[in-house]
Amino acid sequence: MVSSPDRPLDTIPRLVAHHAQNSPDAAAFREKEFGIWQSWTWRQTAAEIDALALGFLDIGVNAGDHIAIIGRNRPYLYWAMVAAQSVGAIPVPLYQDAVAEEMAYVLEHCSARFIVAQDQEQVDKIIDVKEELSGVEQIIFLDPRGMRKYERSLLTEYSVLQAQGRENEAKLRPELDKRLAAQSGADTCAMLYTSGTTGRPKGVVLSNDNIIMTSKASCSFDGLRADDSVLAYLPMAWVGDFIFSVGQASWSGFCVACPESSDTMQHDLREIGPTYFFAPPRYFEGVLTSVMIRMEDAGDLKRVMFKHFMEFARTVGPDILD
Image (cartoon, rainbow, N blue to C red; front, side, top):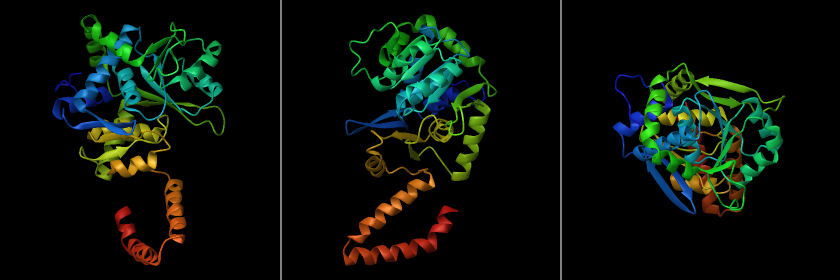
């Protein structure tokens, strides 16, 4: 991915290319896997996205196609979103805890031709409702564990697709460059579905201008810079996570860290120490409740210190939060 100085930074792929050229060695993504934090620079991130975009072209992804993305917060799935955008397709992230029937509705509603799924659990859901899906042609899976004996006519491994893209780069590069150059801020950036709590999920179409202008304004408001970091733990299908982990990260250049799992999120949060952390009120209420319960069994010294600093926090907290 190469950023042209003559083009405005009005799409996510152009922003990624901009950081890859201007801050190639800065951390773009981190992920904890098997207890170890792995890191990718902006240069490495752009290369991963580029290889996947070439792979998408190799399997016949057309501009305007919808590519569903299913799984927990992982760099590879965020890269799949940007790779889809790079070829002019529209990423459609789905809630990973959705049951097969709920996924089937969204996949059929958006006419998804291709699906990027994290693991066997998500692939099995899709296979269970395959007869209800008229347009799905290929499932790209990230984690191959448990699928060694699966019939592969419908399945392609993520890393294999990237390898195909690299192998056929010479013939695919002109088309990728053409599609990247043709994009504009008015083009669709993503299609995000509502949770469906009051009826069927509804697809919300968001343009590049919408995402980037929102990200730019919120980065300015919160003072976010390239040396900040955020923990990506909220559902990828939620618009908030898309703004934080794709929009704001691409605009400001800060690092997105992905926890190992939802079970280790609290521990990973302490380890990575993000400078920017967003959570709904219920999360902070849960943290406070947990602390209050532990203080019930604490010694006298800890209780005195806790009371002192809680009173101090009440005097300075509002100014910090405002």
